[in-house]
Image (tube, rainbow, N blue to C red; front, side, top):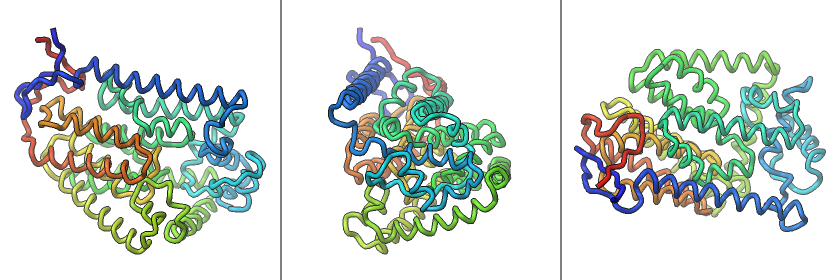
Length: 411
């Protein structure tokens, strides 16, 4: 008795006898999750007992600025979170004199809504609470896309998930809001305004959403998202002082000049401006970035204006948003999981083309590699795979239930 995936009435009707079954994918993902957890646990134990640190300057991780920003949000002068001298002084008081690249806060004031509750907690407890809550948001969006336990386990396996755990950043929150926005844009357009409005705390990943909604003539979702975003911004100004918005704009101008001139500031990016750190002219890099973003926007518009299945539209928007953004870090690649789930959902419903499952698995492996251009290549490759399915897969009656459950046929 062999357990195999059988896709009937689809372009690729052959049986896969090796990896692509629910049980084997679950076991593979679970093995990765357990191995990574054990590795992290061993590293922390070694650090606690005087061994090698988990990473250099362990006190200066990305959660440092998140917790500091929460303390500023709860202070009498929240706008000082954008004051370079005040932020550096607070950072030194927390982590001490070692050099740390986290010397400014350049997120919109809307992020302070998410961070404010952390101010009431000690640093270590706040770190755990932040990761736990944002991880729940991420996994809840995964389950909303594909309500199956295998999807939840697989969603924990990619390297960006563990980068986010290590650094304590906001990748789970971003991916979760992105996923909920895509799910609700199809079924409850006006409710999609809620995650879209909240996603404005990281606007580089929401910039293609209005274009997609416009192309698909989802006017209610577009109008609700616009109104919700304005109200959210106004609420941030009311809660933390309207002076925070001019201070934020000023911090953006400083950030833009740094990205253009300082190779050190862009070497951690998983996007085209990373090339500046390799000696490529910033003018050339930004010209290529603008062309790439334009091409991604055109593709997203055409796909959303067409009649292809919604799952492909959602995947294109997820991958296109990563390709179009000039400011992407490793933890942001949790959005790749959201896009990949929609791709898999379409494949389960209408069948996979030959080699697509292997291609998806290879792209997931590429994200594990440390060199920046390799994960970036995976983003382009997955967008290309989505376009390929749009062009090559005819719309047909679903071969499998739309719940996303991985069906196995027994021969």
